[in-house]
Length: 181
Image (tube, rainbow, N blue to C red; front, top):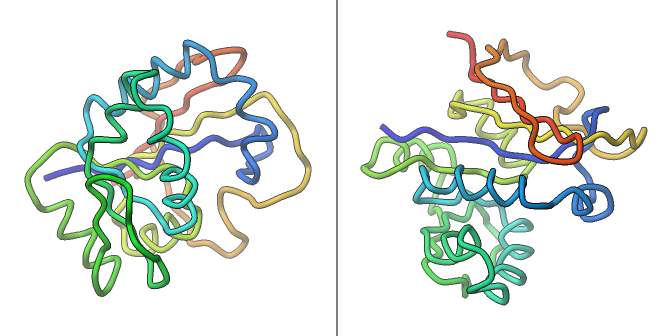
């Protein structure tokens, strides 16, 4: 059975909006190593429409520059959307019907793990169906004080077990959690 890993950038105060403004300055060799290692154990990306459109507009143009970018470009992309247009990024597939059922089927199928980058709304939808196996939070040494939080007010409680920690780069801390069973 495949695991679903949520990997997201967040600020120290739990904000996840507009990462280009505060996270990109920290993307150095440590971040490249993190993404390379993460994607080595995955063969599918799970994306919402907005994240898909951002990634599809960026990653193909960076082909050949970094190994993890080439991996992202070649691996399967599973898009959860009812409004997506043409999926032009190589190896992209629309999840038909109920997203939770589609993701559960993907997890039951053969292959390596699946990774969900960002995709706040999709993550919350999958959280409600207990489909997330691991959270990898890249906590940046930034306090925004405003913006969208990783967890919405009123989201269901989830007890987590800390399974690993690490320092990525420039003060970015990697916290890896799994649901406490």
